Length: 467
Ligand code: 4AD
Ligand code: MG
Image 1 (cartoon, rainbow, N blue to C red):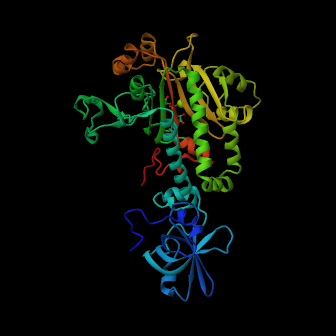
Image 2 (image 1 turned 90 degrees about the horizontal axis):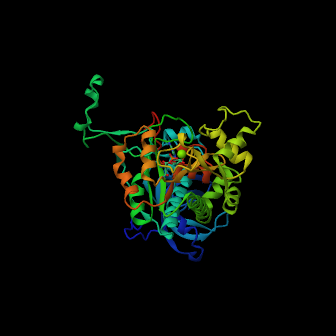
């Protein structure tokens, strides 16, 4: 069978659709039936193999292809079509296949859930194992793939080393206590009154899934200068919103000899690079999002690429919000953590584009952020975008040993747990900075999809871990 080609000689439909120079060639094309339309003499089959959004049209002459085979070519059935590549008279495609024979690979019975053209996102979430077969989820998956490539390219081109930071960790990076425990203790026999003796646990101490690779990335940055980590992170926050997942992917660069301004420059350049990459390399899928998901998104992203991001302090942001006539659900005053309604207001109504907010009050930010001279604010930088709010959170890091010890204590954390992190400030401490980009939030931003559960193959959130 020619289409099982171990040497990857089998061409994808994406490749075949561009083969206008090969008219007249005989090919075998495997794929899944998207739709079938019949006339008296001919069946038109739209065949898709996932390589791109486009289908290849198969012309099945009823003289050549028997009734029984045609009958089995239902939506979702898999088959391999052998035939001649011909110029297509139809609009929207250069070539099509004139079938000589069609081999059924797998039937698809009538209870196949993806019969209709359009399904609700809620329904598709219930069939997470099949939803990648729809146009929307195929496009999201291809965009996600391209963005992964863009992220690695950007950092590799700029002399960053990729570091695989651990998934299991004993330290709470964000100090927010939102960690999932990793344990082999028999919790089903747990007697709550006695407390937990973690010395008997697998690691001999309490361990968790990481909320961020930052602290480990810092150890490598302070050896190699510029590093980045890109991996899964986990948060047991019980927020059931369209922007939060319990398992999500984070991109975290960390740079030595860099302050908060260099960090902001990097974040802006990096985001623009990834947006440009997607617009250049995923045109077909982006046209789909532009047309069906978020009208005008391509122009919006182009405008973002060509404009400078607004940079304001937290204090200015609070002033802007206080000056507003809008009645926010969460009232605004200096010291509050900005809620998503505030972030949206700033990006959509005041500045009409991405905004980087710096110098937040130390009380609402993590212990590792560098304290400003005022003793009240830290060198934090959050990048906010329209429609979503926060997409990046980062900072210059506290590089003074004594200040960091104070900040750890103030945060109610144990100094001893961070002995190795403190060592980085003891031995050749340098100014350094970094940030974390929520990968799924970036995909939401780029595609215009509304819910974060629909831009990761398998969403994990509170009470939701099917598939
Ligand atoms: O702002 P966060 O909590 O920052 C950190 O974790 C730092 N240690 C990163 C660093 O400096 N290296 O998270 C970073 C980003 C957020 O801006 C957001 O985009 C995303 O991660 N994020 C989430 N995405 C999906 N679901 C969640 N529950 C998220 N929590 C944060
Ligand atoms: Mg944050």
